[in-house]
Amino acid sequence: MARAKNIENFDCNSEPHQAALAILRARLGEMIDLQSAALDFTNIEGVHDMRVASRRLRSAMSDFEILFDDDDFRDLERSVKLTARKLGAVRDEDVAIDALEKIAAQADPEIAAGINGFIEARAVHRDAARLELTHAVTNKKLADLRDAFGEVAASYSSPSEIKSAPDESAIAKSDHANVETKDDAVGHDEGNKDATRNDDEFRQVGREVVNRRWRKLIKHAASLYRPLEPEPLHRLRIEAKRLRYALELFDACFDGKLNELSKEVAVMQSALGELHDLDVWVVTFGDVLIQAGKSAKAKKKPGTTAQPDTSQQAAALWLLDYFTKQRPKHYRVALEQWQQWQTDDFAARLTEAFGSPALSTPTPRTTVKKKAKQTKQAAKSTAKSKPTSRKAASSKTASGETTSPKKGASRKTAARRPSRTKRS
Image (cartoon, rainbow, N blue to C red; front, side, top):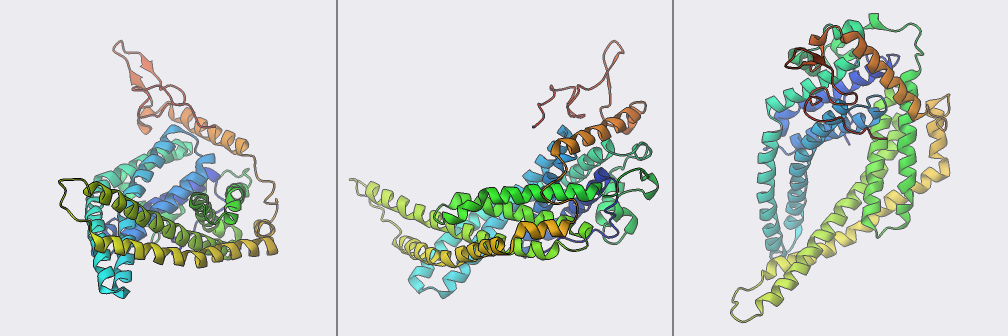
């Protein structure tokens, strides 16, 4: 599994919101920089790389929801999610076609002929998914993502930063130069540091995020003792992936002590991922055989002359057997990893890597969210006298009166719809 690019000269002692924004800016830039590779359909790895980058961005955004609890941030999350789905639709077909081609090359000619029929059907779906992806990652839509991120960043900036909120060209320059250009990569101004701030604040956010991810994984760990139930195992895989991304995300702030732990989680994630893929294949070809049986009964009615595709039925039965036999070895890897974690107390090793305070006593989520609201309210009150620095800071009625957006409403949509209820 590929690791994310490092954010050069990133300062873990930054104010938590600015540290988080620096990370999100880098992750967004990393995803956008892969646009050309993703749209080069001669190499399927381009889509894969951009999809992984979008997953890391989404995971980081989910981790930092405790800091950015507002409608604009959630709107940005939804936009990234839609892009990730388009990438995923193409990647799923790429993986399926690649796997079937390799299997067909080793199968008997009769079975290979049926498998090739499945490949052709998948190729049709992939062409449609590629067309949708092309429309989803245009230069304009990616620029819109940058703009949306810029608005969120501006709303959490310090007073001096609000005066010079980044425009599209500035954000684009930062996004594309987060590796080469040190100043852009840092994502904050050293001169604006609060001297009274506790430098462990952002690390404490990391402790809370990883603790929460670990607890969610534990919640679903019992699914390993129900190996024939695919959905709970799939949920466990997702939680393992999110824990791994969180460990990688905060590794730099804990002297690289989380790196080995993330590798262990990657083993669990990989095994459960293979298991999930096999479960999807089993369901897919099981459904093919069920549908073939129904079609065969329907074609026996008077007046029907078409014959069922026996080569594809034979191939589906052969593939069902093939994928079912592959499943146990991947399940054993996941189970053995879990047993190892129980033996060497993975939670205790997490606590040791994080140092003091212990992992079991993270910063309360409500406290972090309260601090996030205070930070944004301070920025908003400073910017109120200069509405040009924020979009939709106010709107004038026909009588000339100024009305402010409703509390809790998105800046862009306050005039068009009531505020949405915040998530608990």
